[in-house]
Structure formats: C-alpha cells, structure tokens
Length: 122
Image (tube, rainbow, N blue to C red; front, side, top):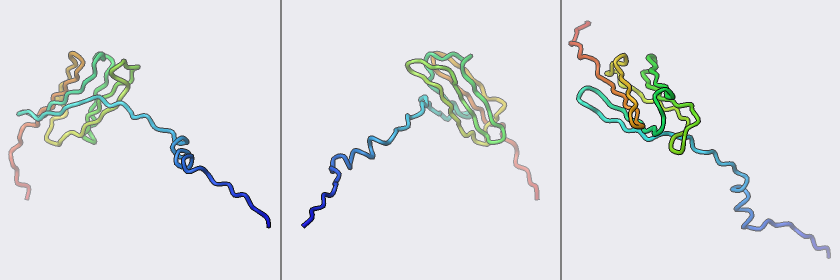
C-alpha cells in the first residue's frame, strides 16, 4: 500500500495570504469644505490652514459650469496637494465669482444672475 502525502494549506495562512499580498491605495487628501446658500446665491468655504493665496488656483470651466479649487504645493501638517471641483447651478453668474483667502479659509462668493423677464418665443 502506498501512502500519498497531500499538501494542505493552513486555514490561518489561507485567510491572510490575500490580505498580505494586497497593496492598499492611500486616500487622496480632500480639505473640508462647507457650502451655504445665501439670499444672493451661494458661499463656499474651504479649509486650507497655512496656505497662502499665491499657492492656490481657482478656475471656472465655462463649458461645464464647474468651479475648480487646486493646490499643488508640498503642503504642511494639515494640508496636502488637492484638486476639488464644484458644480455650479445655471442660475449663478460665473463672471461675478469672488475669491477671498483669510485665516486659512478660502471663501468663494457666487452670486445669482439677475432675473430676466419671461419672454414668449412661440
């Protein structure tokens, strides 16, 4: 009679192997932000402590009605490089967006378009 030895894997290692061989993606940094509706439109506040206005980029994509806030610097203990995008409602006048950076907070003020009167087209 011939005995054949079979190799079985330990249940503990069977469980851990997939976990140990997996590389985890680090979560990309995204600063805290808050959007408030005001009487005249919206106000967006983004927390960027220790970052000056010279290091930031705020752009408007007119074709997609999107507002982009970006920081590509080395960062500090609180902030790392980030890209953040906000969809802007069609009721907002993109040419009147105001940006202020004070005490580590970017404040974006978005004003509504002036109401146009109703016009019959047919």
